[in-house]
Amino acid sequence: MSGALETTGRSDITAPSGAEERRVIIASSLGTIFEWYDFYLYAILAPFFATLFFPPGNQTAALLGAFGAYAAGFLVRPFGALIFGRVGDLVGRKYTFLVTITVMGLSTVIVGFLPTYKSIGFAAPLLLIILRLAQGLALGGEYGGAATYVAEHAPDNKRGYSTAWIQTTATVGMLVALVIIAVCRRSMDPAAFSNWGWRIAFWVSLPLLLISMYIRLKLNESPVFQRMKSSGKRSKSPLTDSFLRYPNNKFVALALFGAVMGQGVVWYTGQFYALFFLQIYLKLDYLQTYILIGIALIVATPLFLFFGALSDRIGRLKIILAGCLIAAVTYFPLFKGLTHYVNPALEEYQQSTPISVTADPATCNFHIFIVPGTTQSSCDKAKDFLGKAGLSFTSTAAAAGQDVITMIGNNELHGFDAAKYGAALKATNYPPKADLNRVNWIMAELLLIIMIIYVTMVYGPIAAFLVELFPTNIRYTSMSLPYHIGNGWFGGMLPLLATAMVASSGDIYYGLWYPVIIALITVVIGALTLRNIRMHANLEDDHSVLPAPAV
Image (tube, rainbow, N blue to C red; front, side, top):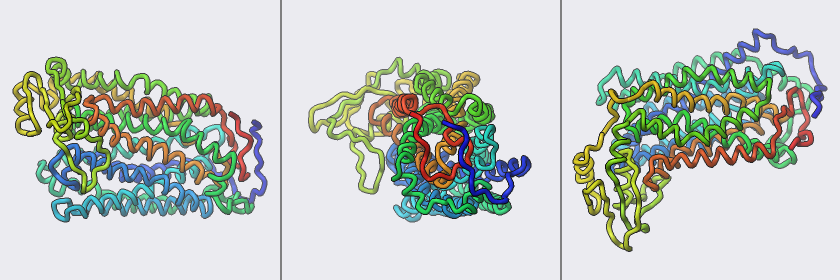
């Protein structure tokens, strides 16, 4: 394809200077860091919120309920992409992400004042889900706006590097959230934190919101958008042009299944599922978990810029697909390595103490979303107990109507009684938490850094890849939808689905099949259908129809 694209209709609007480009990157990145901080506060505290906002009694049920509300924010992100993407292509980039940052900030602050389940019953999770939906809608419009805005200020030969600064913001936002939560938890006793201290991290969003709004108000509109607007080439129907007009709709689908879907699961496995795995299954204390993840984030974050810059030289797609492939091949040994180096006593216990659950299959349920009418059978409760203990077990079928029978070593337990299960674990020398004196900190950190490196490979180049795939007049709308389906649905659902898969299968590693399979599908589709080219290397392409696809 020719690199010379039409740039007619230019006005006297001047291209941004180097200083202005840097201001744009800084201002856009700071605001986006704030949005990610807001969005991931809940994710990091999800295991804690399980006991605050959802019915007590079954830990996995409560955790799945918390992850369900967590997932709701992800599920609605594509709808935010449609709403705000359309506004961004019609009205402008700057105005749109001023609105999104306001919605995100206010929704987060309100969570800090939300009553718990103990105070208002099921109204608590309902209100929490509504606020998560508002956050998801806002984030659905934020990312596409920030990435497009920065890309349209960047030189053609540095676009991967410039947009990679936006790619660092999700990781930095998570790091900031980890630090603030850790400080809050360390500065007060557990009872105080459980009572009110957790709210501080949400209250911090208010000054951050005001600062971010002030910075963004100082920005000018994207020069590429201004030239398109002055030449009268804006799309009158961005949704129709993006998703109902060929070949643009084809490229939306290819972007999703051939790049973003795999990128999403690799991102959430390396940063969030690893965090949950350390805390929930390996029983590592929260502070040590935060420190391990935080160090990995700090060490690996500059690699977002490295891979973004590298994509300017060798292409975006090959880096993304390589990250997906390497991750899929190595996830199982990496997570088994975490068990070996973080909680060797748990690994030894599993090897010496066989555990089995025998129950009527009709009584064992695969729970994903927990609702008020959800019931838990004895089989569900038994698997819940063992799964929360970080223990793998074998499942066998019993005769219809037979109550669950659990074998823990030589201890045979009929039905479910938490006290008896706890006594059986204690009698067989089960380690209730990771022994910090036996943790191999260096190897554990190395494994986490490797997983974050995968994240930087797939995520660093993705913004430039998506921006260059679509023309200016529908760019915001077209790129936002596949990004937020890939990350919001395929990636955001990962903790919820993986947790349910572990509870149902009896294997603490079974949830990894989800990101492995999704990443491999992306590698195959991306390699077969998308070439490593930049279709709109010059973003001044105002055509409403894409050039002939290079597939």
